Length: 339
Image (tube, rainbow, N blue to C red; front, side):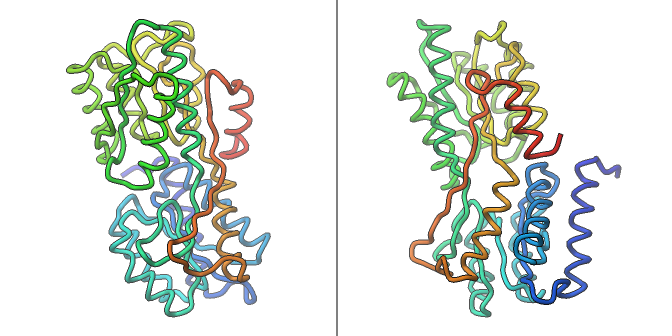
């Protein structure tokens, strides 16, 4: 099977990490930190992993080892067993199944390992959690989209929908709910069809869009809650002859996304594409925040476990056709992912 450039980079990152892990404490006086990512084929997580290794070594003299969850909940949970077995001092987790992960987290805590989480708290373990401040961006995207639609089509009622993970607490609190609130802040009469389950990925998102808009063609505000889903969303719109603007003016719908990247850059700033806003999650700042949180626990600045778990929020960005100039978006993209 031919490996893509993304997969090759991911394999290289993982290989260098595992070589370092097998060599034992490469930095005698430094901490050994297990850094979990959900899917190392994703460019956000690749950049995050690279920065975590650089930043951990340069600022703290720590050896950071990357654990790839391979977009598989079972793999993520199994990786936790390697934290104690591998002699790590600390771990920052990215877990999809918190219930399954809980016994491993508690075992590590009992061994004196500093444990933190990224994105989602781990049940009642109480370990500190690092999160991107997504809610404010989701609200702002919904607000901007509603305003743009009302300006272009004041006589066409807003009908919105979200594609993502309707049963995921943090997705609801950071994406789905505040986005709807943003739309409703502009148009209290907007109809909200709610969040549809696109957790199966790109093809699922495409089919949802085709089926939904065949039945409800009046849908005009769409929040596709991850970049891989947005690929399917835009493909579904294209299949229906939609997904287009006319020189900056919405025709049939406006689309928002998450995980702004170079592909979305071209679409957001294309005046004839209906993808017009995306949440920019900064891998460099996120990686640094996750490492700093671990060291704050080590230094006693943050409690190892509290009830409920403490949550620490790091900046997310509203990348918008309407409010962020194209050159500024390009600079942001180059700074976070490399030009």
